[in-house]
Image (cartoon, rainbow, N blue to C red; front, side, top):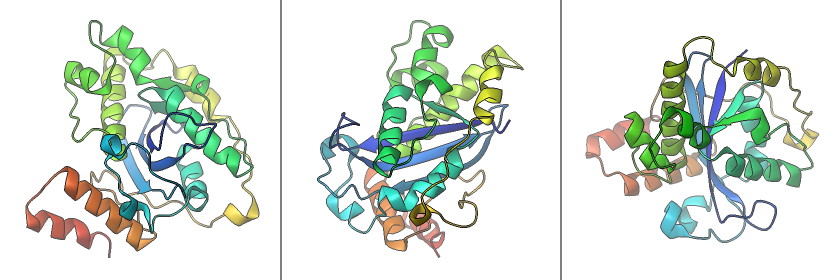
Length: 243
């Protein structure tokens, strides 16, 4: 029983089964007690226009050198496998992730019925709150900076889940889900998608950047710099993490 994988995706639109694609994905891993153990994020080149840039703030130049979904699919699969998938509006994120893998000929166990939705759970744990991520975070006292950045949103949803876990105690009412998901088998990836070695996570580090390719990591840096201005010294320190 490994715990939870809190995910967030930014997309070109709303239709996972059509022409819309994922353009950014983030994963925050929590152990069964709700403690953060690692996080990962990357921009993705959707090989089409980016849709409503006014919402997600991602520009064409940001994804020009970013990896395709096929390139990051093996890493992402390792981050999600054997963990309960969690998201704020999980059906949306799960549909897009499943659709991206389906385009590669891979049928995954990604399904909102095998996960937890912090938005739906808010009805029980945050009564009286609206269901939007920002409203739930405000009600729960969870920080949310720069909404619609995938990693920031995933961190916020992870904070909500930790809040809910604190309210229900140990073991949680959904403990059986942790065991059932741990037993689910992810299909073998096609040879052209396989990679060796575990994905690179930065444990307990709030400033995770994708390591490969370097230009995509730099694009994430540029994007987050636009979203959240910081003192130059901090950005130099962050950029050094790419070395």
